[in-house]
Length: 491
Image (cartoon, rainbow, N blue to C red):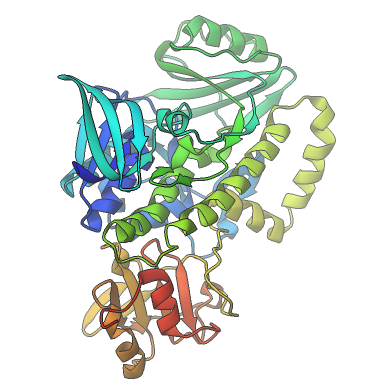
């Protein structure tokens, strides 16, 4: 074997997955077709859940001072994300190029082997592993690993080569995205619906202006090169009446509203994550964030499988958990597309949505959906409100040290958090101490909204989701530990 895992694609999903695997000691090679990062930034900022994920791994500080905001939208209709009590605010102006730079530095500092100018040509899977044919700077060669993960985008070679089904709906229109210099435009941060379509405008650092142009009736085109800026400027003028032809384009791109999702996220030893598994209208900036969260869900499960310490069906939960998340992603982005991009016939629906959003429960529901905070996994029966949900940030005192539930997840290991100084609980978990950190901590003030009032212990998976809690879980702690972390050492 050349590596235990080969990851194809050095975008946000592939780099995050490589880092997660390295935290667990897995040898990983990342193959990237491009010679260097493009510097383009289709994604902009992070959702609240991704902010939490980065904080849980201790890498949020790499981004420096991050501008955040509670102002969001659903299909161009304003939504106050401040109703999400206790959550991070979303980052608004971090270009994807910056995100990829920091993720690459994180992954390679942990020992990931990133190989640029290496293009996957084909793959061959057998019972023991996957062999790939790769074209690199020194010619064509083969590599072999126990598992192969495709993080290579919407046109994924891995997906096509492995024969994954990718059903859905094709694009119905073409839209433009461009970063410009030398132009001043009225900000339209959540978009403006116009008689002929929709436009968005947002200022970026360095005197750059980001525009998105969605003109109804433009047939989708498959392009191998970026569209000329003249097409973008002409479409902008038709929609707004404004002339931007004098602007200097930093980069230009086009995209469509195709909506597709693979029927399975894993076929044997070949796995998909990120845009290779799901493609959709980039409404609300959810694509990159969902891809990163795919990788965090997959990383610890794949690592445990590779290291032969996982329960038999642990890797299957990657599909069962994340396919459902992807399905809801496609649902909400299609709904937003109807609100955003349709003509005047949809105005009554926009008016009804606007009325509903004034109710705080509706705003909270939509904000949680777009932010990734609504996610709940099936971890077993019970009544505790946090079962299957993300662990909220909890300040702790451990011995004479101040820490938090977030900091305890930096190493990407499981955490059993004993909040009641219960030696019997710790004794029952001792046989899993090679995989799970058992921590006794005194919590700071716990708000009712956090769902932790009266809680004496929680078992947190490496991806930050609660797998067991006391009181309120119907199965006992050893059963939960074995389900998620394998058999105890003494067995």
